[in-house]
Image (cartoon, helix red, strand yellow):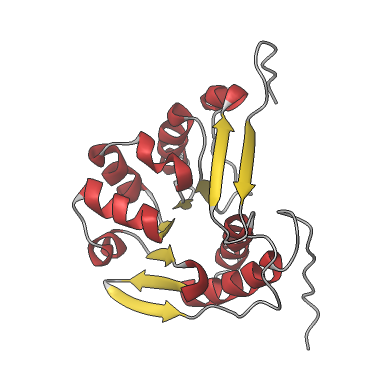
Length: 208
């Protein structure tokens, strides 16, 4: 682990109103030096993710995962606007899976010139999350709608995306289908939104 003594850790200030509209102020800080950390081949690594990070880090780490033969999820999130069409096309071609929300999905399609069906044929699967409407799973050009799970109550949406992402990685690491991963993601997202704070919830995996 490296230390950047002349800058701050990345910081995000998220403001949410009663209608769950959000405004986020983000300072990347030391995250802009993340490309200094290289990804090397490791026998015990079976899955990776390219999520919002420093621009150079996202580009370089994707290439390094391909070189290390590590399958990965391309989940650009709020980092997507940093890249042009050619760069996004390259990410898709390198990735094993792609996941975006509906807004990001439209931007990804516009910048690459590919439809969701076309993107899904270039990877093992594409997921487009739709908030309260659940999510779309695209595999080989075919779309499956995975319905949302009704939460016990709606308290705070902050962290729902991360909760969903964690469920996706949990399932993929175990060899689940993308639809099964999405079903778990929707369940975990429903648990998270009922709690205040991004990580103030618990999961019980005890068989019923």
